[in-house]
Image (tube, rainbow, N blue to C red; front, top):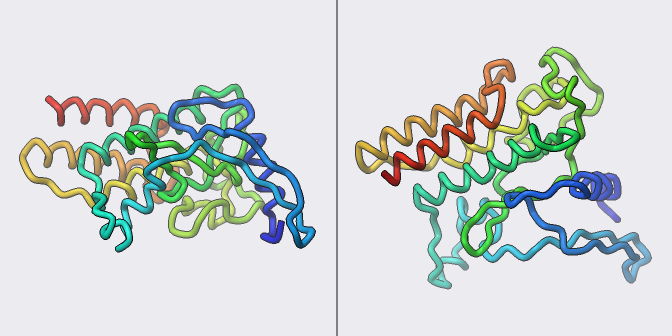
Length: 229
């Protein structure tokens, strides 16, 4: 494997996905381990096929998709459903696994959409396992692991050497929903609530964020009921 750290990332992803199962997490069909024709190690995980690609492709559509006459944007309800799906996946990882898991690289390109636009969180190459005692460590406790995640999506405290915690996995809600536009009074009320949740999940300081992703999940479900009511 030519990319630095790729083998370690592959092992981490296999370990993370070995004992977890949820409708909003990618399903692994098989794994491959061999060598390529240059003699380099080749390792791969084969995911279940997702007809609608990644969320990033829908937030930043290409001209190719437009030429194929495929819708190039997500409506309000689809975006809200995707946010709910992602929060449900995080709730499972943070609160319902035998060993808590922090994804550490949550971003639109790691959220895959199936034919019905159900969101599936993928790419656990940077995932970290936490004990109950360390899942919400204070932000001033530091670590030598370096920055975990992608610049622009990684929690700010990671850049200052803080320990990984579940509060670092919430910023995608705000980044995913920040393009929504209100069209009626009901939508405006819902959007206000959605943005409030997004901001609460992605506050700069981990102590200012929602303490538990399950609270965000519950609130998003309530907003969806109002929107459809």
